[in-house]
Figure (cartoon, one colour):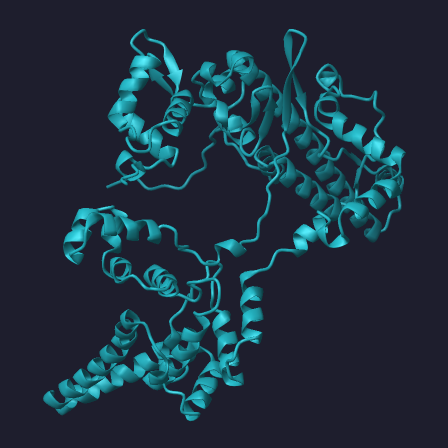
Length: 559
C-alpha cells in the first residue's frame, strides 16, 4: 500500500511570467506603422500622463541613429513634389485656376471630390431604375424588400420562400398582390426556369401528399406520435408564416421584372441563371449556347468541346463560337459597381546608396514621439512629500504613478521596436548585399534563424518584427518577409532562392505562345538548359500554383 502523508517541500524552478507590459511590447512588434499610429492615439486618450512632442529640433536625433537619420525621403521622393507646390504658390493659384476654367468647364474638373462623388453603388443604380419602372406601387414595395437581400455581386442571397416566411411586410404585400389576381401565368418565363421554378412546388406537394398517404397506412398511435413530433419541431423550425405556392409565385413575378433591369444578370440565384439571363437578352437567342450553359457547364469548364459537340449534335466550330460568347459574359453583375479603394503602403525602413555604401534609415515620420507630462510628475512628487495626505490624495497618487509607469513602458517598447527593426534591416542588408547591388537574380536563400542568430534574438521576434513591415530599396518596395525564402540545392552544392525560380517561371510564362503553352515538364527542361537550374517537375507545378497560373491545358488558346 502506498505511503500517504502530508508535508511541505521547497523547490527551485524558473518560470516565464507574461506580464501585461511584456504582452504589450510583443504586440507592438507585429503592428504595422498605421496600426502603431492608431495604437498610440488610443494610448494618448486612455493615459492622461502621456503627450506628444510637438516641436522637435532638427538637430536633435538619438545618438544610436544619428548617422542613419538623413533627408533621403525628402530628397528622393518629396523634392520634386515640394518644388512643384512651391512654384504653384509663387505663380499664383488664381491664375492657374482661371486658365484651367478657360480650358474646361467646372463639371469636368478632375478633383478628388468629383472622383469620389462619381461612384454609384449597385443599390443606388437599381433604385434609380425602380423609381422609373412601370411596376405597381405594391410591386415596387416588394422589389424594395428584395433589394435588401441582393449581395455585392448582384445575386439574390436567399430563396423567395425564406424571404416571405421571415418578413412580415413582404408576407402581407404578397397577399395583397395575390388578391389583385396577378397570377404567375401572366408572366413569360424562360423555359429552363419554368421547370426549376415549379420544381420545389411539385416536391412540396409530393412531400405533403406522401405524408398524408403514410398516415393513412400507419396505425393510429403512430399517427399521434408523429403529429406530436411535428408540433414540437414546428415550434423551433417552422417559419413565422405559412407560405403557400401562390405567394411564392406572385413574388417570383416581381423578381422576373427586376431581372430585366441593368446590369444584365442582376438578381440571379445561381451562376447558371445569371448567364442564361444574359444570353436571353441577346437576340436572336442561340439554342446551342443556351443548352451549353444549362446542361454542360462542367464540361465547358474542362473545355471538353468534343463531348459537348457530340451531346448537342453540333460541330466543334459552333461550340467554340458559343464558348467565346459565354466567356464574354459577366459572372458577377455587381462587379462594375465595386467601390474602388486604393491601399497605400508606408515604408518602415529605407535602404539607399550613399557613395559606394548602403545606408539604413528608419522612417519615423508617422510615429509620434511621446513623453510624460511634467505636470503629473510634479503633482506626484508633491503628493509624496506630504506627510498628512488624505485618502483621496493617496488614491490619486497611486493612479498617476500607475499611468506614468505604463507610459514609460510604452515609450521604451516603441523605442525597442524601432531599434529591432533597424537591426533586422541591417542584417538583411548584410545577408542580401548582392540583391541590393544587382537585383533579384542574386537573391540568396535565407531563413529567420539566420537573422535571429546574427542580431542575437529569438526567431519569433524576427517573425513578428517582419510582419506587415515594408522596406524601400533601390530595387523597389518589398515586404521584409520577401527576403526569407527557402533554397533549392544544385549539383555543385550551392543553393538558389525559390523566389528566384518563381520569378523565372513567371517571366517564362508571360512570354509563351498561347497557342502552344509550356507544360511543367517543358518549364523544368528550359530552366535546366537556359538557367542551369535543376528543379523537379512537381516543384515547378507547386511554384506555378503559388503564382496563381493555370496549367497548360487551361492556358491554351484552342481556336
